[in-house]
Image (cartoon, rainbow, N blue to C red; front, side):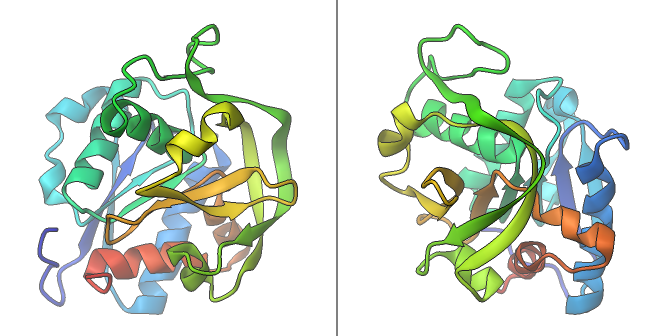
Amino acid sequence: MKEPRHNGQPLRIGLVGDQDDRITAHRAIPRALELAAEATGQALEPVWLATERMDQQRLDGFDGLWCVPGSPYRDTEGALRAIAYARVNALPFLGTCGGFQHALLEHARNVLGWSDAEHAETAPDAPRAVISPLPCALRETLERVQLNADSRLARAYGTTEAFEGYLCGYGLNPAFREQLTQGPLRVAALDASGAVRAVERDDHPFFIATLFQPERAALIGRLPPLVAAFVRACRGEAR
């Protein structure tokens, strides 16, 4: 993992996704980071990283990467390259909604070696669609989430239960759940029916991805605990 910046220097947070202010989460994320900066006393510099220009981005100049909602991305491979960079280089990583889906896809392809792994949103007829349509799409929905007690996610929240918002139609395909989450990627949260709602990596200082969008809380002035934990990890407190 790269060394944290000296005190007084802003942390550079790469926002992996195709910025569109029509997307609620894209309006919420800068506010969530502002609230985290105020709470931690740490200056932040968020930078949007368009997926189709990922080859041109110098990812080693960032203190953390956040793969944001808004899929399908303009360049799926660009998003996967950024996630792989964070995973391999132990760079703090947060994925929300589309970021959750693509963190699972990156793991399937690059860790498990499933070269045919696909996302059903862009490849609906793929035989190995590790991301598939949800039985009931989560459109502007608030849902109770059970956090695994021994997870980094639960430590970030300081509890084992949370209520979070969604705008999502795709999630982890149950047919591949066991193979994808038996380690080092593991389940960190479930919904009331037992469906996976978050994952994290055991072999990484801070790598958490959630199907829900915790950043939405910032739009009503609440600091999302997971965003605060991510910022602290970017500052070096997860080392």
